Image (cartoon, rainbow over all chains, first blue to last red; front, side, top):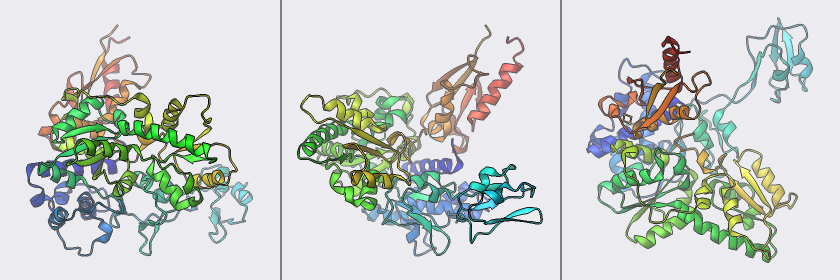
Length: 460
Length: 90
Ligand code: FES
């Protein structure tokens, strides 16, 4: 397990599914925080009461509610659970910060620690371009009215006595969308947020939460609705036993059918290759891929001049939804992937009804007592082709398009890749938009390594 | 050649979710001092998760001994103990 926040999140999900399946969730949901942090058990935060409070909000988010929008602190979870039944809207925004969980980490700054020996050479004083450091009583001091956090002093200190503190969520956010509000608690500015999920993955307090549709899915299964799971290509690296066993497990959990999203990726490739040819023929300089929602959101919100260059081709998820609805017009479709941004994309995708991430699927199976490894291998009616399954990896999209585009009279692809979005990506894209960089095809993936590195992946 | 130590890692859904995925990486990435001395297998759910509460997954078995709440470090530690305490290993 890579960390405790992840472990708690998954344990809680499994617990929730177990209780749901046993029919005890409504009556027990308010007891879960206390049962997980009973009297005299060790606390992870300052005390068990704080732990319990955050567990309550975590359950609220698992029920699909935004802890930020709580208006009545005395309202028991059971009522939320009952309300969730009536409410049929998808969670928007899909990501939120739980105020009780946020530790309000102080802004990043350069600080002199007690390891400072007040040495004779004082390289820090000489290295500082702003003259912000002075030594008083054999100890270096920083004048914060002058410090620009350049970090030169920490590089030259012979005792490693100077550090730069971090704010994990703010440091991870590529668009400056997460900042402290007037209460000193992190808040997401949705005019800037691209739903990449990097803050969610990086917060060591687990305070950034997804608004889950897990209970909606469980309810639909319990009510005997016809559900079709559409599983993203990255699943092949995420579960034990390969996708054939995974698909059998999903079926055993009560889904009517399972579809590889890679089949949708095949259609995306075909369509996108033709779109590229057309765009080049009509004299466009550049086209960017459209399958990564966070990348498209980055362009929409931060590099709008590039919007005309974004491919109109529907994403693999949308095509898979179409395939599923053609086959089962009366079914509800559930996309399953490692991604938070897809929750946002699904809101405007008519053929995608719900979204689950890999953690939630894993919890759904574990909590239902379904062991993937013991399942028979599912016979895929037609396995997707390798290049389509490869969409989940960075450069996979370009590879697939290249294999589609072979012919002498076709335009040459000069592909560029964004393997992971960071704070510099928007600036780079602006240069492409201005024609200052070469290339006619840009593949963008928000997560390093592609979807396989997604914020909600099981195996990192 | 001495007998290899048997490391069985539970890859049942619950264990996998709660950390066995990381431990499984030992199958391809064993520390150099242990490499070649351990036989790694991934198992289906061994039902240990059902009896105890969740806190005990992931489970591994080392030469038959069941270990709960396992981590990569813990497993390597136990393997080293066996390798070095085994006596007649080369
Ligand atoms: S999943 Fe490991 S014992 Fe059941």
